[in-house]
Amino acid sequence: MPNCNVAQGVELFYTDTGSGPPVLLLHGWTCDGNDWAWLSANLCTDHRVINVDQRGHGRSTVVEGPYGAKTMADDSARLLRRLGIEGAVVIGHSMGTLVASALAVEHSSLVRALVLVDPVYGQPDDLLQGIVAALRADPVETAIAVFDRFYGPGSPAWLRVWHARRIAGTPPHVIAEALAALYEGPGGIGRATVGAEYLARRSCPTLAIYGGSGTLVAEWDQALPHGPSDVIEVWPEAGHFLHQEQPERFASRMRSWVGSLAM
Image 1 (cartoon, rainbow, N blue to C red):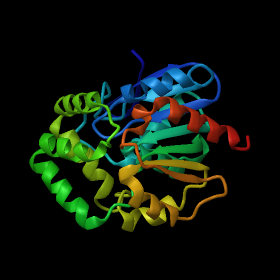
Image 2 (image 1 turned 180 degrees about the horizontal axis):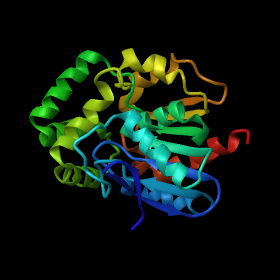
Image 3 (image 1 turned 135 degrees about the vertical axis):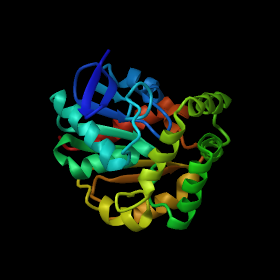
Image 4 (image 1 turned 120 degrees about the vertical axis):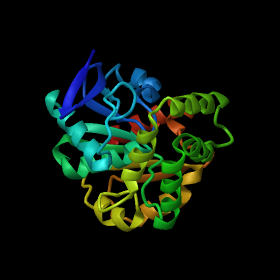
């Protein structure tokens, strides 16, 4: 089974398929690499696709901590270096957008470009305090309530069933602490007050695609410093899991944008 030891007591499960320019896929909170099955099948025809379960998720090691974007970015950096990969296109969803961004800041030589699916940074402090407290009190039910906001009118019913079952199978402390670490303390780069300065340090091209509920975050994102190749767009009819709701459209858009970048 493909596992990589990335820290003391932490092994990441990953798959390595296809050949060509490298792509790293980073899933979201309480999710796993299966979220990328559709995109992986598309990309592995002409790319080398590294699809990883992040610590505490999927088939990777469950640890008490630490979690957080920088910690998980360090995990991914060690995996990429172990595989001899530099200059990957890194595609992240939700929590994975913060991990991907931290990877681009802390390990810039490993990242050629970022593709971010409904980023979850730029969040106000007062909103997050209540959610984190509720998660620590009742992780499963609170997570399911948070996920209820992720679906749009076009979201298929099976997504809700899949996600609710997967949340129920995630260790409660991982549900609470993996999200809390994204937003608490000086490493909480998901907070607007911390993330604005930190995210401005990304120097690689970035494509950010937001679902309909992410309009306010997209506006916050627009106000950050951006390079000439950066693109921010909103798919108003899509939910948070737009890469699963519209896999063909997402793959086509990602390929078109990456193909437009100078080598």
